[in-house]
Image (tube, rainbow, N blue to C red; front, side, top):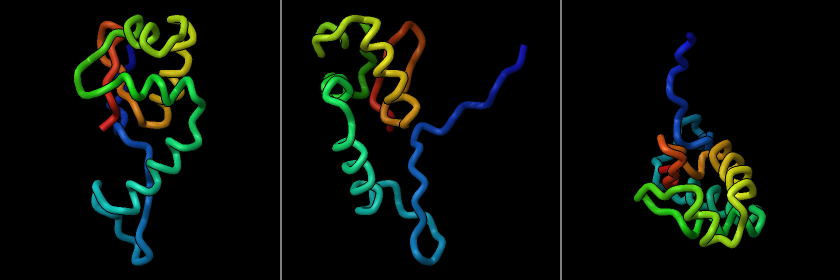
Length: 97
């Protein structure tokens, strides 16, 4: 069995003009996140609105977002790949911090 190291939560890779990385709460990072959120499909935005730092089960998220569990699972996978959500054990999700 191969054990992979954990993947970083955020997928944003911004660099300042001097080559340094901005602080996590900098205006550049916030602008990049807003740009990404604005380009998301409506179903993914609805799922994100249901999330916080408290783990929520995929079935509850699907119900609140008006999606089937299958649709919600697909959309959550895309959100996870973009670093916007984190999947936890038991098919629960939180915002990707």
